[in-house]
Length: 362
Image 1 (cartoon, one colour):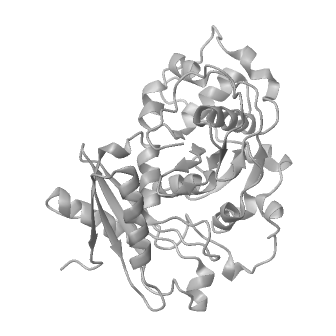
Image 2 (cartoon, helix red, strand yellow; image 1 turned 135 degrees about the vertical axis):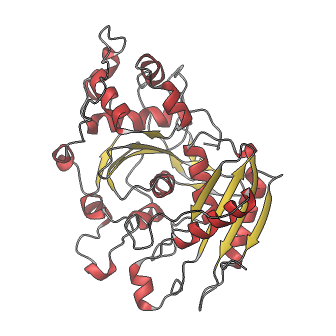
Image 3 (cartoon, rainbow, N blue to C red; image 1 turned 90 degrees about the vertical axis):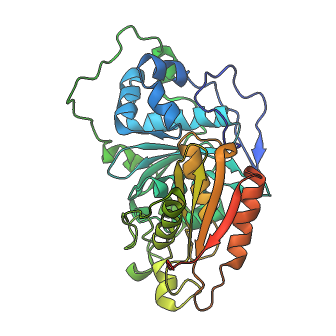
């Protein structure tokens, strides 16, 4: 799927032929229910069109009630629906604690840059400040090798469950559309959290990846709960100064696996890289580098920022500029990473300005 693709529209027909992206095809799926129309009737359309890749917990609960589905079943339906909308491999994830649902289509950034659903999912969780992932549903097989490498860094890996969304729709949910009795949420109504026991019947991702018990506590990933994953205030008297501050904050929040830091690997030292892009409307979207211990499946600063842009319903054509901040440390040169991000920007927003800034404010 390309950035700027409209997700929240009615499905007209089922997939006629399984498309392929990055060498991964889609199984033939039955037509998913018309989630767009149901969301509109429930009054949620303005919210999900504003943040099209995020369903906050109360929207998730209303959809569960409408279709008479448990959270795990809704994730399966959403993954099937998203794959049919995006015509691409897709995953859907349930965030730890918050219960928010994140939609993650495979993303084509041009310049030979294809982001897997796993990368989009983790990037979206990162940019929204979530602290983990409890379950994800996918219409394809379990994660690719690079996607698995990225999931190995997620702090909640040992509880993360995989839901196979390639099967038929659960409970024939299409028949539940058009209910005359819509649920009307009342002021102060408590949102029910997803029940953890629902997912215990599904396989642990760590088992599928063959990593259960393979590494000690000192080597497990802590992405989304790493020590520098915290709020920093932006400073500046102008938009340019605020953008530069956002880029430095993004670099400060970047993720490096504990095992690499402890072993003196190529990520040893200060935070590595971050960026902030600015749109015509004056919106800032930050992106932090996410490194895996294998060097595969991670995210560059601009990739992470573009995921945040897409999750918030913005088009790449609206990007005016990108400020990129990298710190060269022993055994690591950020120049190649910066050049790669500049090439991606040229592909998605050719008229946007790209500039590199220093880590320290002069």
